[in-house]
Image (cartoon, rainbow, N blue to C red; front, side, top):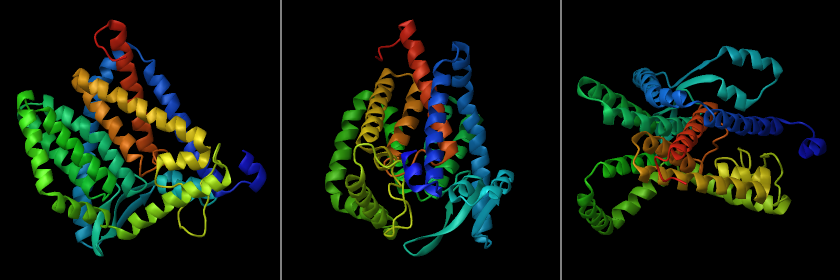
Length: 358
């Protein structure tokens, strides 16, 4: 508000209000989920994975269709929604335009090679990577408990969803997904075999340090300009706010001549520092650390559903290091839905005395 009073209203203030809406909406969703009845908790635990199964069918069809159409020369497939035609009457806001388009695939360049980059049901490709991180744990949950033909069908949907996340070319999402799948496989191994597996893994890592370094550098420079620009942006954003108002921030993420994206973009944590200063940054870091701690406590408890919903929350906390969780609305909605349900299950378990999570 102070920024508006000094500088007048601009598109950057609109973007900040949009981000603020995401956090307020997330808080309301979390509070609502935290206070639902026990029967509703049971209903959601049973049916939320089924919803993601249906969603993965839709994703799989769009992914296959997108690949086919891309190979036929359709390099940019997106559809404006009805609401986009409506909001265009109130001015041009790129964030709103991106959020109200149904995007499927767009041509991008990896090592200067044209490739299809998917942003299925998301305003941009990296946001779809986050959506995949929310969905995959529940597909694994369904795969674990399914039998017979259904297990094979779930496996096919899981493979298509994972493949589509890889084709988002969101490096952060891909790395988190690989580590998450490795953790899932590790958790299914009998305990007495884990020590041997860890020993073998560490030995291979030691013997393959050179190769691992090469793979890391390859991933980092797959989109070289993007990686370097982000690093420069992070450093500039921190220095910029320390020179402006490091205690409470400046309320918006402004454009500057040095970059074609706003200061504080591509990181929820740095974005919070830019908009709310050290005070807001400290609160969001404290929240993320406490939630991650709570998730690992839930994983150790051993409840299958809690384990998978915890994995989705931890994954998004990590993804937020290099992306804005308050920009893609579907990801934001599902994240806080998971958060509220997670906290509600823990609350119910503590009341019944059935677990030791504090």
